[in-house]
Image: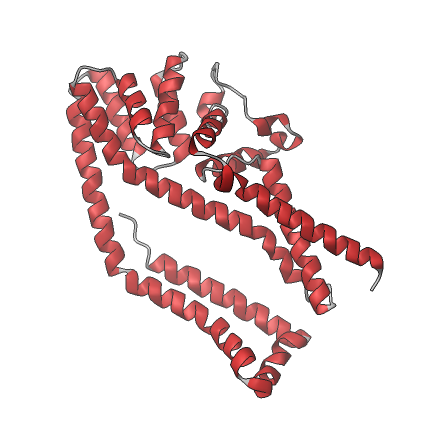
Length: 323
């Protein structure tokens, strides 16, 4: 094997490990206060497209917008997805991490299999950070929706005590944990800097994409235009959201069998192959070897893998019911 190949393998492995370390650095060593300040700084540059056309003292300011990637159309969406996941890594560095993982895994599999063509599936390793970001984003959004009724209750008590709506936002930001604490603190900060309440709430909806926020914003808009007891409206809205969460828990309990069946059926082919290789002896390995050692076997394995993934996604979607 040429010496240059060893150098490339070493560089690929080193850069891949370094990229993963950059992705996990904040979650390992960064404290919550520092991460919250960095997320608030990012939030100043993430505004709704309808708002960006208006004059705003909050426009711009993101680190990613200063880079070459900041001009690409998909960078804004990726930046918002990273923010929703609670990650402060810049979009450019995140894309570089995905490329490093793909290249590093391909080189590693090439070394193990001695065939660059067989190692091509290793390029899919670059999708691992995207999957992880999606998981973190869904988890953070679910936590925001779980904290939302408590935030409404706190705002109701503050307004019944005679405080303003902006002060109620700030109280939620000071008293409740992230993610809802930092988001409402950002709304209060934007209003203090002279931003209209309507625009600040639109930015909140654009940043979080929580399902219950439109009802909250509609209630505030109607109250500001027609008047009324906003504290009572927010109290009833909080009660409605709590009841919806209770119904959602019952639905998840009823659909748990479907999700378990999807997980079991999707894992069975991989478990069977692993058992044949590890526990089947020479006969089991000889039985599985054509599946990975021949061109026809690789094609059949790829088609089977695609069908398993498709069936898993369809089964999960059938067991997922929106409440």
